[in-house]
Length: 123
Image (cartoon, rainbow, N blue to C red):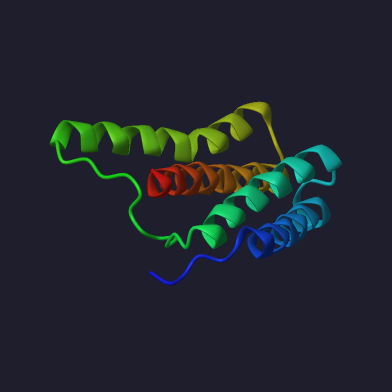
């Protein structure tokens, strides 16, 4: 791994990334400030941990050795992945609305994985 980016640099860059993410969601997917703000904050948080802790984005963050644990994780991850699509279909969201929800959820998953990995690196 390379060196960590100092927090005083990572935080503004992450904030910029979050602002751009929120603006794209607002402009093209969900023209409402509240979901755009939630998306911006989620992506800013994920970007901060990605930059400040030099965590590879596509690295495996959660590993289980027991087959039953891996299967349980896979089933849960599948549910988390298709959940927004199922809920969007149920409530009748438009294509852009549903895409906005999926974009936000991807940021949520990235934030949770990256922040947990960062916390483990510090301990």
